[in-house]
Length: 137
Image (cartoon, rainbow, N blue to C red):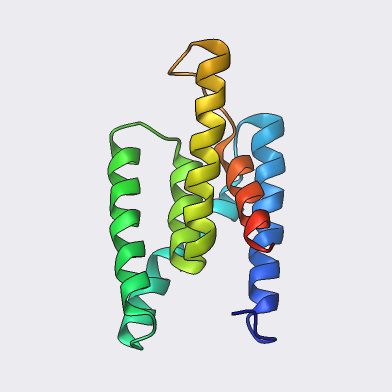
């Protein structure tokens, strides 16, 4: 999976995610220069890969999950930056996207158990960046 051609792309993506995760941790917001390009590239990538007939099942699953995430964002169940970053992850690096959902779910579950508050907010992009780092191992 880690060819010498794709490793720099994942490294760049991970670097941008880490910067966004630090911003989210410190301020509760992520800059648009991080989230909008990530969203744009991620929204296009699985469709391009479908056109190239590359990993069709993974791309279809990614597109489906991106639709579910978009529905959750429309319903107000997640922040705008979280939505844009997750769509970007699922489009560009599906494994990191699935890991991000798992880590965010565990993190959110722990917060609910600790505080008893289902509506408590936490820095989602920080959880996504941590999850993407985990996929390297």
